[in-house]
Image 1 (tube, helix red, strand yellow):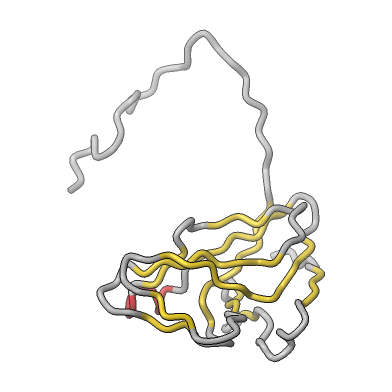
Image 2 (image 1 turned 180 degrees about the vertical axis):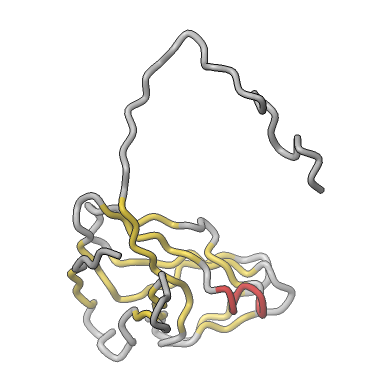
Length: 150
């Protein structure tokens, strides 16, 4: 496991919001907290952008993925709508979390609440090379349930 440094700043007035942190020894994601000014109630079927008050500088060759927290998803239907969201190495704006409520009850997001996970990943860039045809495989163009799994 490689360790890297990610430099950060906080927006003024968010110093009380806990910093992202790993919640267990082998956790791959850091829980990130909401920096909402007042509680935000997310109604079923609605989507909102939750501020974190953080701005990060990711080293080139890495990205930070924004993923749902499993407990919020299971217990309340709260998820990261664009999961995994991607924060690129050249982005310097505030980290925002796009949350959606796919549950059946309204859910209130409080200041300092852990709302998502941030996972640091290395990035591999590809070069697309156009061909006249592609080599065939056993699966070929089968997809979207072609194996019979229901």
